[in-house]
Image (cartoon, rainbow, N blue to C red; front, side, top):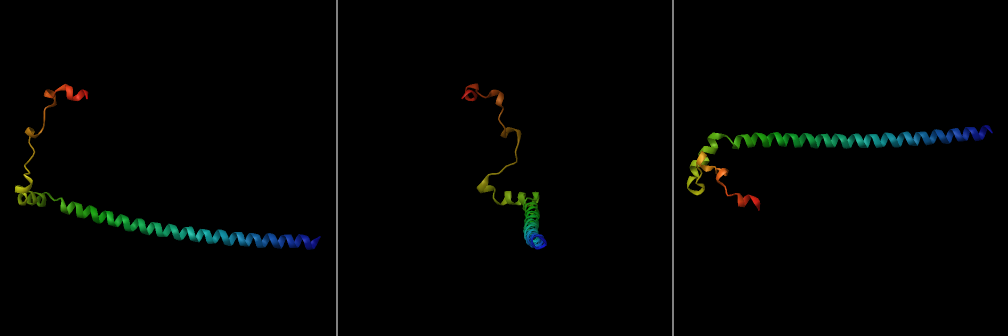
Length: 98
């Protein structure tokens, strides 16, 4: 009887050690995945910051004005005035019904 009890206890001890090793290994694997994802997120956020800075640099009003001046003949860009907008009170209502 003692032999069966001790054998069962030994088997349970071995099974718990195997289970603990498995959980430890899975935890380390998941932790490594999390670190990899955090690193990728950091890279993407740095890239976003760089693109925002580049966008701000490219959209400086002075630069855009010089581009408009350089390409005026091809683009025919002019400042927006109220004449560029249509008064919809005069719009024919039959177009709105379709």
